[in-house]
Length: 270
Image (cartoon, rainbow, N blue to C red; front, side, top):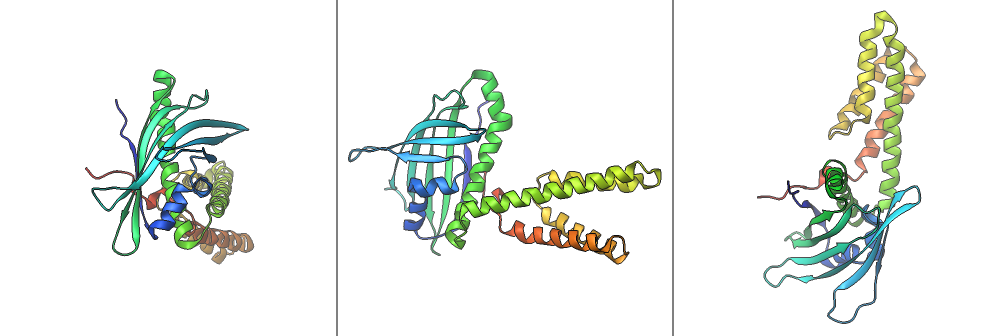
């Protein structure tokens, strides 16, 4: 079954020159786009497409590299600006063999743009490669594209550098992991006491919720603040309850500063 192209769009308050610079300048582009660790433009002659090299670090000192070319400018048939892209990799670790796509800049009357992308690619390694792509790689790549677009929006609109967003995201993930482990510990401790097995199961359920990604996690924060407030009121470990409640509330504030794929549209209208 043929996969649908990856599509992402987001509204950004900006002028065209700024948005174009942040997306077409490789030194700025690699700062906000999770898909690339480095982008190097090669020398080109007049009227030729811009060729470039790219690298993506995948951890443990490993990286995937490839080549591409891009050309962009105004669309003669509309007010849109478009940048087209073709890319290729023969790196042994690359799941992507070849691909094509575009960036489109659609202006609005209120000094804002809808910035959108659509791209498709061919995978390497036959059936195993297609299966890995369908169930693992493509969902992650789509999410990374959407997260990057929102990081770009925050950088342009609020001057919040993507590296700061990534750092805040790491801290938030550690906070979620901490509360997950905390509730699992409480749950296991209570579950083995026959009278507290229901409480232990509920606490373990909270541990699961903290590590499961879902869109309304602020409700979990609010609920947990209430839990620790009740525990403090009942004088059950007052200092610890107040401390954990304050950390939970701080997590709400931190979550408001994070880029999110939910702030983008990831399905194109039919």
